[in-house]
Amino acid sequence: MHAASAARNDAGKKSKAARRNGGRIALLALVAVLAIAAFQARGYLSIDYLKAQHAAFVHYRGLHPVATSLAFFATYVLVTALSIPAATIMTLAAGAMFGALWGTALVSFASTLGSVLALSMSRYLLRAFVCARFPDRAQAIDAGVDREGWLYVLSLRLIPVIPSWLINLLMGVTCVELSTFWWASQLGTLPATAIYVGVGARLSSVTSLRGIVSPAVLAGLFALAILPYAAKRMLGLLRHRLSKA
Image (cartoon, rainbow, N blue to C red):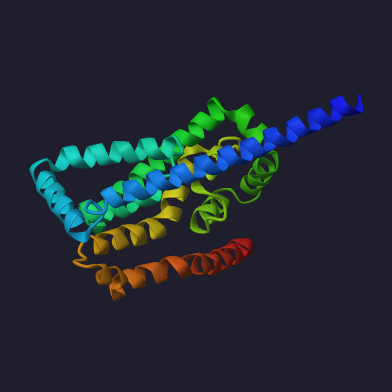
């Protein structure tokens, strides 16, 4: 009996060792594949190649301005509505492809529309799932909306302590009106959107890797870093005024 138990223990240890070795082999294989892919793609990651592709897109956009804007807008709405983690890259790309002003307008309205669609799906299709998956956060968000209304939505957008996609889902279990959610979200995300798009526009004009750390790009990154602190200060003053009104 003891021999059979020892045999099972040995078999279990061998099985665990085999799984560990298999995992290590798979990891090494993945690293090798990524290394080969990076080596083969080195030409596509060069500044010259990226500049050439940017110039080609600018030419195409000049020929089809409405189609390119609508295609980008629809893609951004879909990415936001489905909570696909690509919004930051697309926001930077908007600056590179459409410039600071038009890129900011496209991203601002597309991201807000996508957020409203995500909230609607959460409210009418995924409410039970969201409440079960995030019970504590759902209660906290609901209490915050009941307590401060639009100001709470604005504060979550200005100071993103919770990921944007999660805010969209959690707002679906609250009583916030869609119109209030729309304008508070668009206003709250506008500063960061403008900064990200501006950085993307600056990056599109670099001619070397050294240009990535140009004063304009660094200024945009610095603005992103201090934005939450400035927003927190502004919200504190706003709450103080509203409490006295």
